Length: 111
Image (cartoon, rainbow, N blue to C red; front, side, top):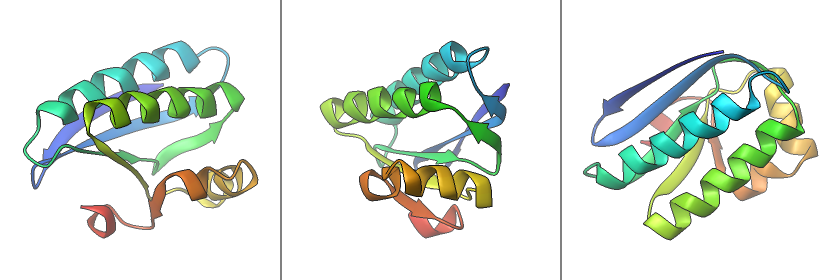
């Protein structure tokens, strides 16, 4: 799994690429924590996780999102998810994470 972070309009946009499974869940968790910390220092205190590059996410990835959401809430950071593909959208719906997070088809929709 690859990871990149950029700043757009005072928000941190984190972009994981690949699969989040047993082999990559720890790195995903660590990158999310770092991104929340970056967002806490950003102008708008907002983290957008761009799902465009994610093919799949196991329950370990969902757990990482839960931990990151708790960290974000504690730090006063708003966290949103953007551009999930059909598989990721289904995973978010089945797990009801689409109720926990704002989910948008575009990054601009959550900026």
